[in-house]
Length: 323
Image (cartoon, rainbow, N blue to C red):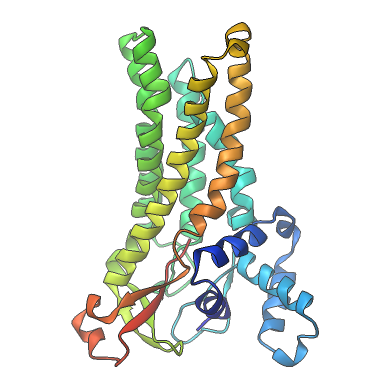
């Protein structure tokens, strides 16, 4: 079992512990680390005799968890693929925050809304693909089928994300209640659904092909489609929670502030509140959503395929959820 998976299996089974770990891992300073530094850190973790002090070990774990996808392949479990810098977990907030803010703005036309939705859904698809469980991938390369799934996801999600602006523009809906609904209410469930949809489709190969399941000693028991489905469902739920909350809280805050005399005297403050609250909520929700489910989740043997139930005597097995 990959050292990252071993770490999450032993240290990431409680929500409080996972939250503390993710707050530390999401430090954007770690993005400055090179691929060579990440490989050196993983090499150090693999040689216990070279681990001189706790701080050095903690820094090595941080780099390994930040920059490396756990390698779940049966015959190559001692190495991991280095993540592109832009798709590492610490890059999610600085990259996604401006895209989320722009996609939630009440645009006057369809084209700006389409552009920002396209950029947001493209980045989300790239992040989901890079941080997937690649158990059944023979090589660290995107297949033609996977490329079509990513392109289709971005296309459909972008079009769906621009529906509120398209409807208002196409049918000339100008009444205040309708505009409030299309610009403040509808984007909340839409953002959550599109985030979940992005995960479902981009990582659908995990449901079709399955993912590896491990016993308590880290030995691979086999490949399970049911574990793959559970991994994708949990990740989709965590991403929907993050994006839905990020869309809901700023809108709710603005509705409440509009009743105050300060906002009534200075309506331009509404834009400032929206621009400041959205990245703040997103920044709080990222570690919370990443911690919602363990990286090494458990599944009961009775919930697996029959051939896997007879392959081990253990009642509870583990699988890598991805991110």
